[in-house]
Image 1 (cartoon, helix red, strand yellow):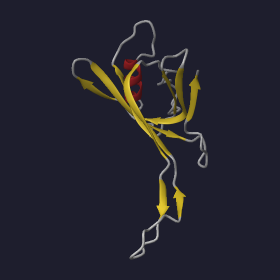
Image 2: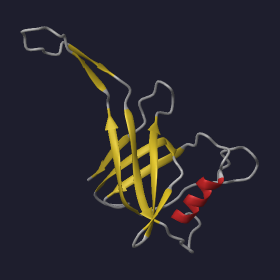
Image 3: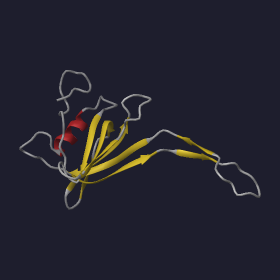
Length: 150
């Protein structure tokens, strides 16, 4: 378990295992092209400037209370909601598309800020959680690692 606010009590589990029902990951390089403005000619970009990369998204899962483990989605929601004095949190998010084993794509975001999930009550009760992947250092570029499992 983890103690993000250093108050002596462990508010978070070491890991949470959630079965996702949907989500999205957006990767943006924020490239800006430099194009001169000339009258009477076709304006062609003469160069570009690369901005900061941005990796963000959201994921949804059922709100479940798994009695066999202590890291179900209900625990995830309650734990994040309970730590009210922590502004910045850091989670290692791993999305295993295609299942945990065998052929698939793995998205690993080692240091991600996770917002408190919101719930939706329709046919089923679900949670939607927004996240922002961050590099491990201010000038790092390791906010996202993609691994293909053949």
